Image (cartoon, rainbow, N blue to C red; front, side):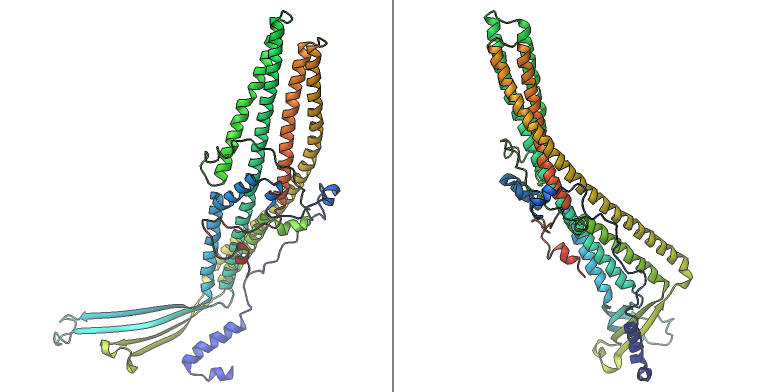
Length: 495
């Protein structure tokens, strides 16, 4: 330090602030971010031991477990062209651009300037001076630099906040991918379920047409009544009335899948017109522990990064309590003639250390600090709520899937027995051992049982997809094809 004090004044003006910056480089205003410790259960209450025995590993491309090429194509199209994903990607790119801009605050701001002027003084301003003497030229060129010495961490906290916001935007993009894929899978499963229900209604209508034909033949032969014919026809019409509503539901789901994949609502009508079977129920993934969920779910990661960003902004506000030191410099040349510019005697320079401290503005600074603290408290509450909602999502998905499978098994047996009862009722009616009411009742019961079974199977397959969506295990960062960016969101989030 003693040698520094004996330096030339210009050099000392540079060396001393730089030395001070090195000494205080570890000084940063505001609290350092620490991940909140949340009390989590050791396991899920609804996790089944039987499921854990046959559990599959969490798979990012979970829809492939349904082994349906048409579903695979729909999901890939949605990942490439969905408009909600385009919005999330644009927000991700914006956050990265702001982060790059914030990092430049670490560096000096360098500007270059030049000026050429030709002035003439009036005769009153320069009395006794000839006209030629009142003309004056001025030539100037220089380079200046200004650098804020980040002694109290205002700039570093700002960069920290932007980095956390970029990581949050990456989490939002990944979470949107989970949502969009989940919506496509659920919509496709519901479409196949609606098509199955429509097939059941039409098949039952065909059976009831045969019953009506049999009743009309008996009536024509004098062995039946008009009352029996009317009842048989009324039941057929009731069954046929189911078809329009189910056909409308099929069309709505086709429209939804087209829009999810970034196309007009009618784009998939031809591709999805043919009814297909419901996908098979895949093996469930191992749900792991609630602690694993904090690492898997991108919405939890995004909420935590926003808490980190809000904590860093407390430091940005707190740094305003302290003075700002700015180191500035100028190197240039100034001359009255262009030919003399950059000559030895025309050089100019300036080295300055600026201090800006609005110590009388302490009230406003503390108000901004209080606002930043309140924002961080709100983000902490939002983070904790996100974790609780994620745990609830997993618990609900697990219990719905378990109960759906139980219901599916009962309804499967009910449909089989109803079909057997309907066949026996028709046989007995033809033999004269039963009346028409038994036939109509058995057919109505069969329709209800088969329709309920189709709905239950749809719910079972959809509940399996919901478990995968709730766990969101190992989700890839797949960018929409129309706007690729360099790197991945997870890389951006790293320091």
